[in-house]
Image: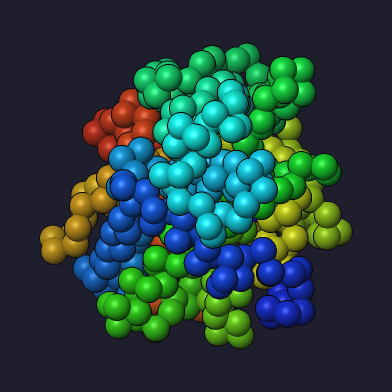
Length: 412
């Protein structure tokens, strides 16, 4: 099975579509300033892969490696920490601009606010981020995980002092459970998806994600690349993709790159919404069973959907084997390129790019042409996680699982 995709024939320029105010340069820099106050903060690496770029026939290829973020092996802490910081600032009646992270975690602030329990649903990375931020602030976290979640991810959350359980629910139903428990017990839900009446925290999470885009743009310019021509972005509910796309579109204006939104074929709510084409977000249902656990989400974030609807270039639905391909390509690079340890959700964009540039016929070849991918292209990928599921990483990279459909990739 190959890819399916939808092209955005009504793509808009910044200022013509959904408002980008929440992801303006000012808002993104505000989030980055907050993050820089953490002792653990440093820019994650932006690796250039010149040998792979040459092999694929593209101009330049950059991969931002989020496995180095705050020692948590994934980017999610950017959203969780900023949202919790903004929530606490609001409770205190103060601006986040005037509150240092050290003050937020002080005994005086904790005494003023009292005990707070933060709750969330997660496949692992987001819950670990919420648990980490809650512990840093001396508060409690309760985390619900969908069925099939890796026990290693569960244990990583519990190791941070959170109460965490793997449910018998899919991701979206686990979100509903978390919301119900928050209402019942007076907890604060920290979820990176939005619904009517719950929009502030998801907005802050998206703004937190923009920090990595601010870094990436600075790093590309330092390496002599003014800006990317193409950016491939993974989507679960779409918060990460919307946060990064929104900032880059706001920052670069009419020079914004082509954005390609990438999802698993069994959890492709953004692609499905684009395919239906009525401008509204649409859910997909079922078990959402995919190797890409971090993207196994069936209901779009209503805030980010409008940004993705108006400014993305293409929406691509991918089989699981492309994630495994990406993991192998990054972990076993051509000589001279850096090794990048990427998890299944982090590597799918690499797998897709590899497929597009290797294919000579079929839908993949057609999409390569539609996107104008050639030796002038400057491509930005973001490896959103490291090997947060060691079992899945070993199965794909060491033992070669999910490779049966790769043999005919050039013909399909």
